[in-house]
Amino acid sequence: MFTVVGVSFSPPDIAFDIVVPRDDSTLFKGYLKVLPAVVDTVDFEGGDYDHPGASRTVKLSDGGSFREEIVRYERPGTTDPDAAGHFDYDVTLFTGILSRIVSEGIARWTYAPGSTGRTHIMWTYGYRPLPGRRFLVKRVIGPLWMQYMRRGMAAALTAVAESRPAEVAPPDES
Image 1 (cartoon, rainbow, N blue to C red):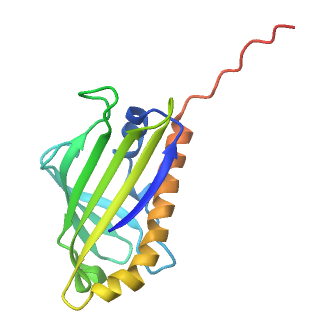
Image 2 (image 1 turned 180 degrees about the vertical axis):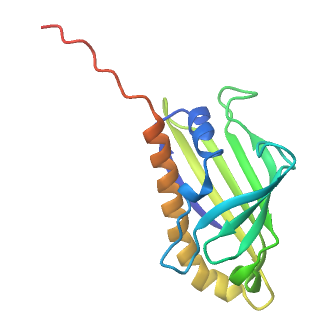
């Protein structure tokens, strides 16, 4: 399991509404030509990709792909104004290089209220290595994946920041 955390200067519902439906190709651009970029999402099943059971195929820049299925989708504050939001999905059907290293993955995003108007975003991702591949995932893929996740989180936080309305300065009273 690998985890990165970021702080958004927007409330949890705003951060969730900006990041979760965002085009993954704008967030996950690859890393060092070793970890591929997301180039497309196709084959949506179950309607809109905003509820448990909905799935899609993610295409990668190296020609590989994988399948994502939402297992938990809870917008922040839906049932309780102070409740965290969750966007969790399972990852299967890897093709390309990843199919020779891992059998499946899990991704968990949490959007928790922070101090006033802020959100703590936590992204946890875990792979299930194929037999004999645990060392490769932990010691080789893992450190690269953490950098990939950090860049993805930074892109998510930038997307939230750029979507915020400009702060209005108080009128000059001179």
